[in-house]
Length: 254
Image 1 (cartoon, one colour):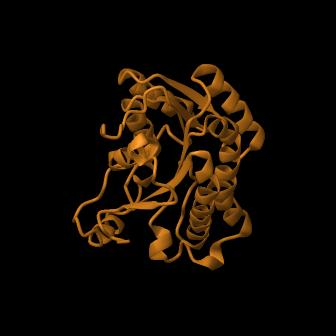
Image 2: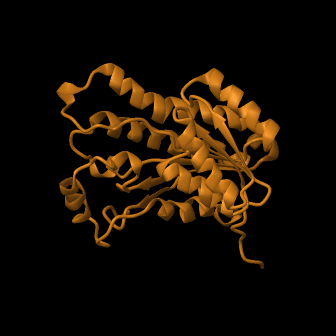
Image 3: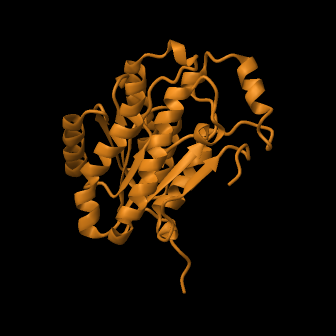
């Protein structure tokens, strides 16, 4: 029997929020494994073009698409653009995020809580629906949610984010059992705090306090998620679904 393949050759991956931070590393890893990659952004075009250039320099067949992943009409347009440019989406990585300030619950308002639900429940729901006709028709698909360790840890002063990520976790668990008969796997990667560009202004004290929690003794880097994503997207993980892989140096154990 031949070894399972980690190659993503001839597959099309769409990574939401993928021109910075963890998303950029995920897109690059999938591309290096052979996938054609659609990179998504909504705000900064110069930053997006710089990230897109990295994929092109690495020889990845790729496409840059701008759009709001919480808007149904925008999602439909982006999916049509990707299908025309690269082909229909086989691998969906749900990574897009919004600002995540920590503050007491009394300082939140419902509009802020709703923005969390829009990114971590509404967007995965709409993006998944948009990809399912093709995935079901070919009886093959990979849906990878990017979650967070905060659900397991119950991080303080983070209620809106933790609640929305918890809902996303429930979404992926139920969807995994629903779509398994169609040959579609649904999994989650839950990283710890991996500093990226949006953490540039976080205090050194905060970083030192968190690092002391990590049994491995050091922070992770965005590339640490890449191998997990390639595995879950590949044939090697064809019998893996409904799982939540924590990548945080051992802070949580399952």
